[in-house]
Image (cartoon, rainbow, N blue to C red; front, side, top):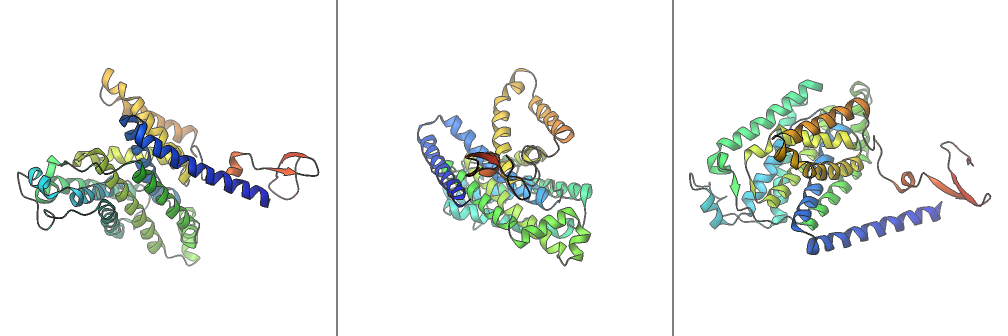
Amino acid sequence: MAAQKNNYRILTIVSLLLLLVFIGFAENHLDLYIVRILNVCAIYAILGMSMNLINGFTGLFSLGHAGFMAVGAYTTALLTIPPAIKAQIFYLAPLIKPLDQMNLPFPVALFVGGLLAAVVGGLIAAPTLRLKGDYLAIATLGFAEIIRVVFTNTQTITNGALGLKGIPALTNLWWSFGAAAFTLVVLLSLINSSYGRALKAIREDEIAAESMGIHLAKHKTLSFVIGAFFAGIGGGLLGNLLGTIDPKMFSFTFTFNILLIIVLGGMGSFSGSIISAFIVTIANEYLRFLDESIKVGMRSVVFSALLMFVVLFYRHGLMGANEFSWERLFGNKVYQKTLGRWTKRPRKGGYAG
């Protein structure tokens, strides 16, 4: 068993090294379009994992992710756009002080965007987490639309419906994949802690969890705030990748795409969210011809049909509630010296030939 664990550690290290080599190669040698798609895949993985924390692990049916992304995207963009470009963008009404002269480093701006999204998430959590099920979904969707409408009408902060242009293209594969790895490590650490067990208990049965001494409001708010923080990080990365943002980007359709990712990957599986983020993003680009050759909106029809199929016939998604592991990949096989061959380990005691 010790030798097997060492082999798995070696496989993990080798896989990480290969990933680093691939990122370095892709950043310098692959076509810019492919690099852009890979960046979007990693950003969608961040958004999927953050939404899965709320919906999959805590059992809260939230549809407000687009609003948190908007907060992170606008905050990061405003803090990284040079003052000279801000003066050109805000020609209808000047940007308020001191934002008009602020120009922070990208990591700081990204972190501030995540923090502000977390604050907004906490403010939204206070009134909405008293609700459950469909009522919670409607309330969070309503707050996301409120954020979008506010951004559309705050000309001196967000430039209103005109949006922000000239955003520095600071997001690259190192930032997007690094942020995705950081998100995965933090969320896995959280889920494997006592807080994570409490969140799962709330998902299974709130009454039983409360009777065991779990503070429902505290843990729900914690899940909501952390999910909003990483949604803000994803939004900030996306804004500085695209170079331009506007309020229409952060409509319910964006939340729907993230919901499709976590349903397809498996509610309660970060590995599933990562895998399905790549599948959905690449498929979305591959099916772009449907909007061009048939009719605008056909891609949405295809993805809606896919979501219905998954919900009806494959409810647990690709990974279910399981995470990726080498044991699962190799069929949980061990080498039994007495038999001199590979055998599968049974679930309870002994060995099966």
